[in-house]
Length: 88
Image 1 (cartoon, rainbow, N blue to C red):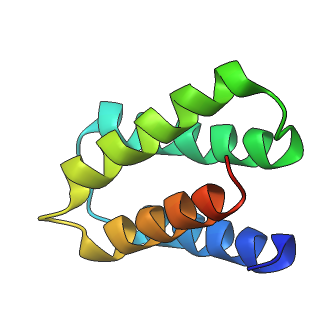
Image 2 (image 1 turned 90 degrees about the vertical axis):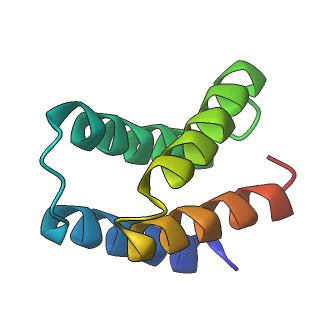
């Protein structure tokens, strides 16, 4: 997956998040921050300290959303797999 396809994947995540019935403001905020973190990581792949936070947040968010928001979970897993394929 190239960077352009990855950006499209992030756009899908943004759209899915907008349409998702997430009533918990904290969860919604964490997901929005996660998107921003992933975008920053993509632009600064050498930032190792930021890397661990992004990876942990991706895994945590996917686990929390798995039951009620499978589409969001799928997109988060795709993002995680892409970052892993880059060695991030």
